[in-house]
Image (cartoon, rainbow, N blue to C red):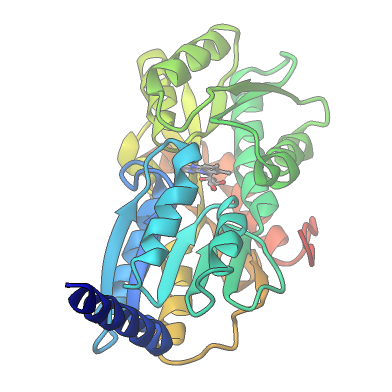
Length: 336
Ligand code: RBF
């Protein structure tokens, strides 16, 4: 019996060693969604871009893993994903992911990570791409400023930002960009900032929005994932307006959403994953910052809510978008 156990042990040990030396399949992709894809444009685009890259690569396979809204469980979920030995590449999107990936990478150095909407430079297994969301915030800030001034002439100018939680990209890029846009219209603009506490509670978001609209705010920017729907439904009831972030804004409510600042996350994830699956490993270790200049930040004018705005506002927006793309104002930065 003892000899039998020793035999079993030896076989198991050898086979697990064999697995480790072979390494995970470089064409096997895990898409790690730190949250829930549905209702969060960044995550929907992440899944779409990765799916397309895999579909176009012979022999490649994909699995979507939704880690849910409890951020305390993400680390374990990520470790389980990587420890399965199934995946050569993990693709994700979120500013908090690089740190988690770097920790997991210590035990699984053969696995590669591509993380969008994030910044970490110099880790040999990780490639990150950060969007210039100061530009993105500026575009909807400028629009919110123009619309507010048009609708409430002579009143002290004010706009709203309802966020799920605070984090560095919000504090250093999105919020200052939004404020810069508002103040490019009128330096006296004041921002009313409110916080939900998570990325899913649309009832709480609706409550915060109702108070702001009730106090005379005309336009609110939600940075709240699927909770942002709560802001849109209150705005719809009151005939007020929302500016949207990332993508698919007019689809939520074609009239209430009056403008949408976009990131080309589907295109970016597709491009980066496709080249990685094609064997290009030169990007690991690097952290890119992409902007309106490369077409990765922009404005979507194709919605009735935007088309129905006064022509003077749309013309002013076209000018502002052109100027921003030409470097005025210049929000470029090299590290984050
Ligand atoms: N954005 C979403 O759209 N949905 C989410 O569930 C979501 N969860 C996030 C969790 C954390 C911890 C952090 C730091 C950011 C999260 N984001 C989420 C924000 C996302 O990275 C991005 O900043 C915004 O979507 C605006 O583009």
